[in-house]
Length: 220
Picture 1 (spheres, rainbow, N blue to C red):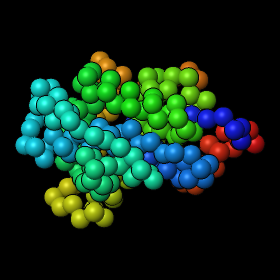
Picture 2: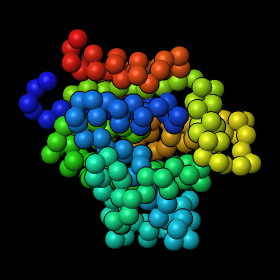
Picture 3: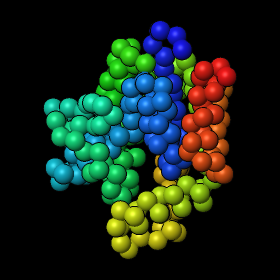
């Protein structure tokens, strides 16, 4: 690997395994992992905790005031508190798209993300990394899987966390709606770039995906 800072952008829809793959990849390459989606989830969490409406722009911008989001050793902190677990609750998943589509919010988050990439070698995952955040990233990957596979993964995750009154069909319906919002929002929609490597992991393990990406990055 070169001594210069290297940036790896990973995009894709919800449930495709982006975060899991990015974390393992960053660890194996000794890069800093920046979970951009978690940043929006953190602001969603704060908005809800304040009793504000995440679907109302003015409420979200109010919540964003004086908000500090940071990463340390692959953990995310909201106003100084570790929120790794809290931001993965289903209520956050249901509301985060409202937060992510707000122009002012995205501009603030992107500024933070770009600053991080300027300082160190990073792996970032999200929905607009290769298009907006790191358009000149050294490597871009678009990771996806079938809607049934992604829904199944999310459903099993929720069941393991003890979520009740949730069904596979409900999760699938919510994921389809999430895909629609992410792909058609005005600001930074989810889309593949022409220079992205497309990796469909419907029938692949996480380790197989990571190994494939490393072979590309290291030129094996």
